[in-house]
Image (cartoon, rainbow, N blue to C red):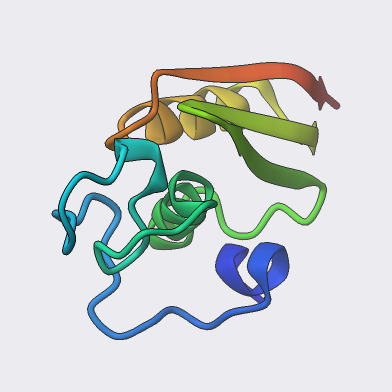
Amino acid sequence: MGWLQRLFGMEKPADAQTNPAPTEGNIDPERVGLNGEYDESGLAKRVALAFDEDPSLGDIETLWVAQTGGTVVLKGKVPSQNILNKAVSIAGGISGATSVDTDQVEVD
């Protein structure tokens, strides 16, 4: 099971992108969905898609992705600091991400 499936109960939509152009007028960057549409959880879904697309992350079933505005919030446990650093790097590179909060992540 991938990140999108586990976190949002959805398969990857056709033409989904981690940084799509908005399809409508003035959508805040953190609210742009996988295909450029308005999505309240757009940033978190695009981060999950980016995690799905990176084979070094796999699906870490003890880590969750959420968002508060432009902040990506990671919660749970990761097996190593290297994995957490990789997740933070990927999440921070998604359009609309202003910061990545790891205060709720425990490194085993």
